[in-house]
Length: 238
Image (tube, rainbow, N blue to C red; front, side, top):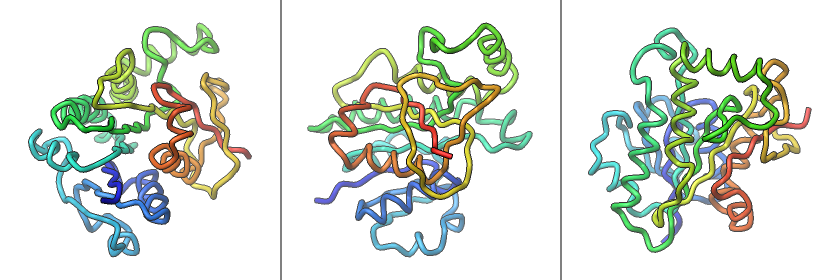
């Protein structure tokens, strides 16, 4: 049986690139999407794509577990749209809640080999328990303020907190932290274990580079072993 990757948030700018990259590599993709009409036409007709039309936030736990049961990996590109409703409206805990539900579902599936879980957050996310060493007092105060005023920022941090600190037998994880998102072609991107740029002078992360790294994580054993249980920062070479 071929490996199947469960893709969440597959109609956004990052998710579309991830879907394309995985399909181009011959990986079978099962994408849970709110509307099939939002999937790019050339991808929607791909024989390796299985579309499940559902709202992940309201999908029953039993159904999520059923969709996950034969998957070797899950990639979450979920996020909040940059509109007033997207930032301040419900569901405010979309990413963190989904991460927690996927984790519980994996524990109930009890796979023979741990499911790989790749979660996209943001460079504003700290490693849980403490700020990254390069965060100055000004940045720490700014992040505290942003997380208090903008629900997506705190949602991303809580999502990382759900996974960090433990690794259940059913699930292994990588939390990817892109910098300022740019829709550009592939570059020779770099991966860092720590924050490398100031929030006030951000680097860039191309959607295509993020998609390439995500696909490497779920298909390349060496890449997975290197980053498993970590929170790499990805930056594109200008």
